[in-house]
Amino acid sequence: MVIPQEGYLLRIFVGESDRHSGKPLYEWIVLKAREQGLAGATVLRGLMGYGAHSRLHTFKIERLSLDLPVVVEIVDSREKLEAFLDRIDDDITEGLATMEKVNVRLYRSRKTE
Image 1 (cartoon, rainbow, N blue to C red):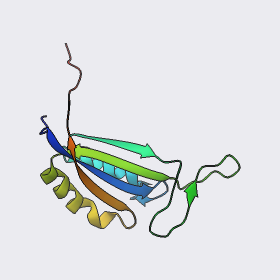
Image 2 (spheres, one colour; image 1 turned 135 degrees about the vertical axis):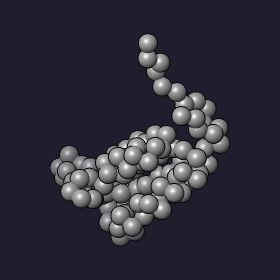
Image 3 (cartoon, one colour; image 1 turned 60 degrees about the horizontal axis):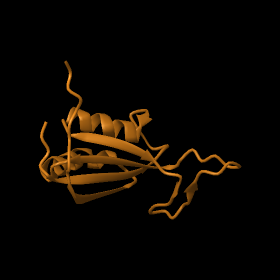
Image 4 (cartoon, rainbow, N blue to C red; image 1 turned 90 degrees about the vertical axis):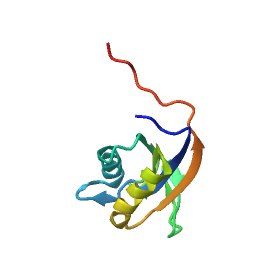
């Protein structure tokens, strides 16, 4: 697969406890992205954050949060990411999605012998 040097980064911010069809929403998003043939996705777990409700989510030793912020990052062309976002938009009931232009420096996999 080839990604244009001028690619795009889609970031989807959700909560760790958010669900879709019984599985974590972030997992569902990554599996959907793979199914749609997008170049790659990564899930990042935040230590602290808040969203539209201004409710603070944090990880503290004395208080383990079960709803830490999670960011799903997906890189591909703008057209593919826009189409993907259109497909999953109705399934994300709470969260934030952003898109920005990125300079793809390399995208390669290990060669199998």
